[in-house]
Each structure stands twice: as structure tokens, then as C-alpha cells.
Length: 125
Image 1 (tube, one colour):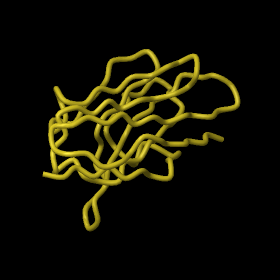
Image 2 (cartoon, rainbow, N blue to C red):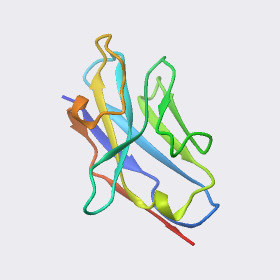
Image 3 (cartoon, rainbow, N blue to C red):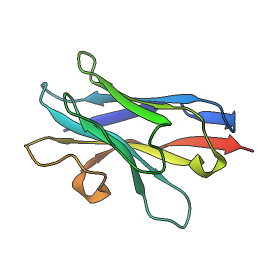
Image 4 (cartoon, helix red, strand yellow):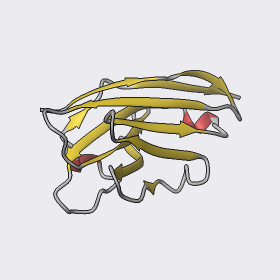
């Protein structure tokens, strides 16, 4: 069983930065595909950034060059550093994880079975 606990959301003005953290609790270390998704009311959940513990990241086009996903494999934490934030980035952000078994780590919410509780990010203009 995988448990995810997010932290670090909040409110910021456009152009500002925030860092989200997600602690991934698993029984024993195994390579994971982890990432961040976001959702606004009335819209589908969209992928923001994903990566495996040791793999290359995969970003949504809308955040490339502004967001960075990283992992602390010793602590099982996945981070999302968000810079140059825009009002369109306002959403509830969700951490997601699944055991990686060799398939591509994709920006597809249906691939993930474990989710955090969600954390609000609000960017004002």
C-alpha cells in the first residue's frame, strides 16, 4: 500500500514561485513512477510532471521551462518546483504514484492507483 502526503501549496502573485512536496510511504523501497497532476472545477485532471526515481522527467507543454520535478530517493519525497507562476496554474494539485514495472512513466492519470489528498495552489494576477 502506498500513502502520499502533500505539502507546500498556497497563494502567490503571478511571476512568483512555490514548491510542492509529496512524501511517499511504501513498505519497502522499490522503483516508483511518481508525479503531479492538477485539476480545476469542471475540467479533467491533467498531468503536470512525472518521473521515476532515477529516470528523466516528463512535463506537460504548458509548464516546460517553468516547473521542475525532482526526487529525494533516500527520503521517498517527490518535489515540484514551480517558477514564473501564472494565473492559469491555479488548481488543486495532486501527487500520484505507482510501482514502476518497466512501462513508460506517463502523464496519464489512469496509470496511477495512489493519490494524495490534493493541495490548493492559487496564483493571482
